Length: 116
Image (cartoon, rainbow, N blue to C red):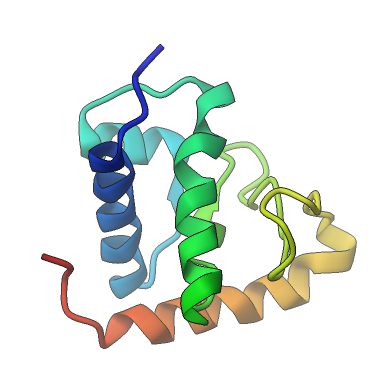
């Protein structure tokens, strides 16, 4: 089990921002390759929740929704401003809204410089 640190969260956020600038979705295993570290599935919330919460606090679109499952090609959750992980993604109910939010993420981060 990897120790979740602020530095690890920052590194993951950098990867997400980079993918958002490129207008690309990313799978969990791709993040692991980018940061050079395996993360247990049960630990992902410890990394993604703080990123989600920061986005919500800043009024930014949810950067974590570009993280998708390899199997479904969709995120596991789609909380839309509610508590992190409070709403399971339902493709029939959420697909259109998720697509709009992804477009918003791409538009928002495309013009932003890389974090320092």
